[in-house]
Image 1 (cartoon, helix red, strand yellow):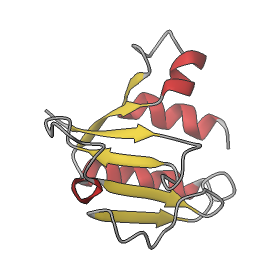
Image 2 (cartoon, one colour):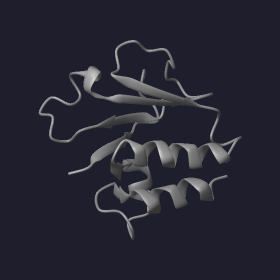
Image 3 (cartoon, rainbow, N blue to C red):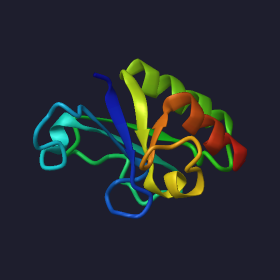
Image 4 (cartoon, rainbow, N blue to C red):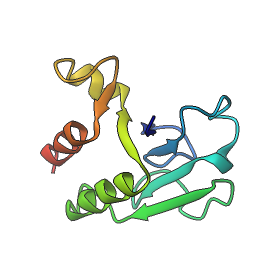
Length: 113
Protein backbone atom coordinates (compact mmCIF):
# COMPACT_ATOMS: atom_id res chain seq x y z
CA UNK A 1 0.00 0.00 0.00
CA UNK A 2 1.25 3.47 -0.82
CA UNK A 3 1.48 6.50 1.43
CA UNK A 4 -1.30 9.09 1.34
CA UNK A 5 -1.01 12.85 0.95
CA UNK A 6 -3.88 14.27 2.97
CA UNK A 7 -4.74 17.83 2.00
CA UNK A 8 -5.80 20.13 4.81
CA UNK A 9 -5.94 23.69 3.54
CA UNK A 10 -7.24 25.37 6.69
CA UNK A 11 -6.07 23.73 9.89
CA UNK A 12 -2.91 24.83 11.68
CA UNK A 13 -0.17 23.72 11.62
CA UNK A 14 -0.80 21.72 8.51
CA UNK A 15 0.30 24.05 5.73
CA UNK A 16 -0.94 22.23 2.66
CA UNK A 17 -1.18 18.80 4.23
CA UNK A 18 0.62 15.75 5.53
CA UNK A 19 2.00 12.56 4.06
CA UNK A 20 1.26 9.52 6.15
CA UNK A 21 1.36 5.75 6.04
CA UNK A 22 -2.26 4.52 6.15
CA UNK A 23 -1.16 1.30 7.83
CA UNK A 24 -0.23 3.27 10.97
CA UNK A 25 -3.17 2.90 13.35
CA UNK A 26 -2.84 6.33 15.00
CA UNK A 27 -1.60 8.31 12.00
CA UNK A 28 -3.05 11.62 13.17
CA UNK A 29 -1.84 11.25 16.74
CA UNK A 30 1.88 10.86 16.04
CA UNK A 31 3.23 13.58 13.74
CA UNK A 32 6.68 11.97 13.94
CA UNK A 33 5.39 9.38 11.48
CA UNK A 34 4.17 12.06 9.05
CA UNK A 35 5.79 14.48 6.61
CA UNK A 36 4.50 18.07 6.65
CA UNK A 37 4.07 19.87 3.31
CA UNK A 38 4.00 23.68 3.47
CA UNK A 39 4.43 26.53 1.03
CA UNK A 40 4.90 30.29 1.27
CA UNK A 41 1.53 31.80 2.10
CA UNK A 42 0.14 28.69 3.78
CA UNK A 43 -0.47 28.58 7.51
CA UNK A 44 2.05 25.81 8.13
CA UNK A 45 5.28 26.39 10.01
CA UNK A 46 8.13 25.27 7.74
CA UNK A 47 10.27 24.66 10.83
CA UNK A 48 7.76 22.62 12.81
CA UNK A 49 9.90 20.25 14.90
CA UNK A 50 7.08 17.82 15.64
CA UNK A 51 6.95 16.15 12.22
CA UNK A 52 9.17 13.30 11.10
CA UNK A 53 10.00 15.21 7.92
CA UNK A 54 8.90 18.21 5.93
CA UNK A 55 9.18 20.10 2.68
CA UNK A 56 8.57 23.81 2.21
CA UNK A 57 7.92 25.21 -1.26
CA UNK A 58 7.55 28.67 -2.73
CA UNK A 59 3.94 29.74 -3.14
CA UNK A 60 2.67 27.16 -5.63
CA UNK A 61 0.03 29.50 -7.02
CA UNK A 62 2.59 32.19 -7.84
CA UNK A 63 5.32 29.71 -8.85
CA UNK A 64 3.59 26.85 -10.71
CA UNK A 65 6.92 25.12 -11.33
CA UNK A 66 6.81 24.24 -7.63
CA UNK A 67 3.97 21.83 -8.40
CA UNK A 68 6.41 19.67 -10.36
CA UNK A 69 8.76 19.68 -7.36
CA UNK A 70 5.84 18.68 -5.13
CA UNK A 71 4.87 15.90 -7.54
CA UNK A 72 8.41 14.50 -7.52
CA UNK A 73 8.60 14.76 -3.72
CA UNK A 74 5.34 12.81 -3.43
CA UNK A 75 6.61 10.14 -5.81
CA UNK A 76 9.90 9.93 -3.89
CA UNK A 77 7.87 9.34 -0.72
CA UNK A 78 5.76 6.57 -2.27
CA UNK A 79 2.57 8.65 -2.49
CA UNK A 80 0.09 7.41 -5.11
CA UNK A 81 -3.12 8.55 -3.42
CA UNK A 82 -4.25 12.09 -2.60
CA UNK A 83 -7.04 12.70 -0.11
CA UNK A 84 -8.56 16.10 -0.93
CA UNK A 85 -12.17 16.44 0.17
CA UNK A 86 -12.64 19.93 -1.28
CA UNK A 87 -11.47 18.95 -4.75
CA UNK A 88 -13.41 15.71 -4.41
CA UNK A 89 -16.55 17.80 -4.13
CA UNK A 90 -15.48 19.82 -7.19
CA UNK A 91 -14.51 16.76 -9.25
CA UNK A 92 -16.77 13.82 -8.37
CA UNK A 93 -16.21 12.41 -11.87
CA UNK A 94 -12.58 11.47 -11.08
CA UNK A 95 -12.68 11.22 -7.30
CA UNK A 96 -14.09 8.59 -5.02
CA UNK A 97 -15.04 10.33 -1.77
CA UNK A 98 -12.19 12.82 -2.10
CA UNK A 99 -9.58 10.22 -3.06
CA UNK A 100 -7.56 10.95 -6.20
CA UNK A 101 -4.84 9.31 -8.19
CA UNK A 102 -1.69 11.44 -7.88
CA UNK A 103 -1.57 12.40 -11.56
CA UNK A 104 -5.26 13.39 -11.68
CA UNK A 105 -4.82 15.62 -8.63
CA UNK A 106 -1.68 17.26 -10.06
CA UNK A 107 -3.61 18.13 -13.24
CA UNK A 108 -6.34 19.76 -11.15
CA UNK A 109 -3.88 21.82 -9.11
CA UNK A 110 -2.06 22.94 -12.27
CA UNK A 111 -5.37 24.05 -13.79
CA UNK A 112 -5.61 26.78 -11.11
CA UNK A 113 -2.29 28.36 -12.09
